[in-house]
Image: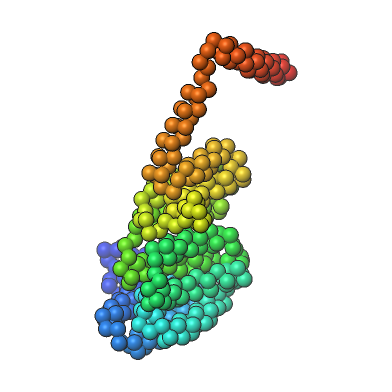
Length: 409
């Protein structure tokens, strides 16, 4: 009897060996122990900056473990009755491939030369692992998928070295972290735009087809989540607080990717509601930000960059896209309003100040234009008569056009 075969027994009468045969918890135990061991060794090595080679040995050991996991997953997936076990092993491999345990990150923080050499080797091995998975399961990774997966894994390995060098040179700034959040936020959009990552492989075996879809989604989602974890670690290593405005780019990136992917599969009302909710959330999170991230883009100092302005501009682009492709007219005035508001100032206080100054200027102009004599009021009345004449003509012609349409119907 195969371990994944259904045993038609009363659960109360099922023996322990039969329960083991049905659920096979040993793969779960193996994965938990490997990840826990990686975390514990990295934590112990992090406290001692001179400990390098144990981390290198750890990287070598779990690379061997990865190849064993891949081989076993492909073998079980091909046997047609072990899809659940194969799916779990592929999930474990996606976690290890994405450096969820931060082993490469820890190695780069300890020694940049050693870390870069090991990371470069790991990047090459990652290509071999992806090829083994795709060939073993019958997946066909497209050129776009290969480039995108390589980009995600390269960012996973190289981001720590970039932040380490900036910190070592005392050049690290809050803007570098904010830029990294925007880079991570753009990745879901690139994932959607470079679809399909995997070619459609027909199979009469529904279980194998399901395993292929599961694996394709894992290879997309897990590296993106791991990048967020690595970025969180970069904040922790440099002792930088994660502010709420850092999450605004991620909200816009994910919502834009969803809109592009699903805009023609759902109603336009749902698309507009999603965009308005995401835009309002992103703008709300970007209201407060430190002065260290504000910068003048022109030497004159008139054009000032701020997270609030950038988020409002990107949200306006998102609204313009929805208006252009789905004909949602409510998005056009929303986009114009966002751009107009962003033009008032780089912060809420500067926007309020610009509105206050504009109202004062308008009141001053109105007071200057108000006639002071009877002659002046007479000229205003004559000019107004022409205006109301044109309005009346427009209303009359519009009414006549509506009546003509009703008659023709």
